[in-house]
Image (cartoon, rainbow, N blue to C red; front, side):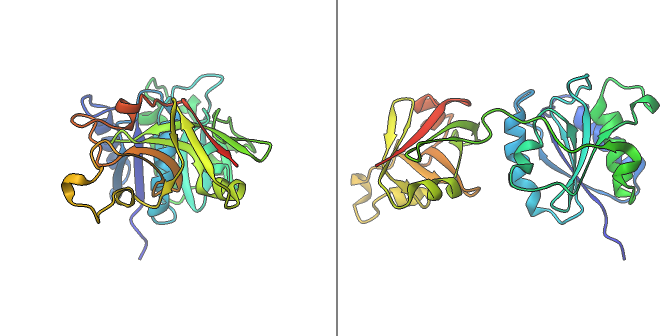
Length: 278
């Protein structure tokens, strides 16, 4: 018995407009049996690195063979071609705007094509008219070579990888602000361990400094102290998050009440974050 195909959606459409429903309707019109999963429709408009971070940390939880539509900055232009990529047993359909480069920086795609079905479809809504056609073609068992010509490289996002200076400093940047206002950097645990080699360090960003990286949020709190004596509210901390990226956080943050790393520390996407070693 064959598995029901899974198609995921990651877009900057939001949920107020009809766009998401129209895309889902088009998929259901093409396939009698399909599972459609919303990863996120709250990507900041045209925010490629945010979309890349989210899909990178979500797709591996899905079964191999899943098809992922990435509808961010997807208008077709001479500098923004449409591509379909088979990577790590998954399929990704998106624009060649750098979004795929965060997924391929440590993996080699099994197959990549530049989609060339546009002469058969008139559209000003490519996610609906082009990406859906490609996704349903793949879901039926169709080959990538039928809908595009092979390519061997992609456009890269700037600031994907941190810079290593003299093996004594890592200079990275904030690439994502999550729902809690935590500021996620592009410095991975792997890179940190390779450079740190058990040396002491100082993490700096926006004038704030940290000399310790916690294993989890609650490790920053001394629970041996009476509750009224603990430093909890507003406690600043650094840790490697569940995706193994260095994150600056406020303990039990809430952007709309007590504040967050973004609001209280003023951290924003593209801000510099550095680690110096001694």
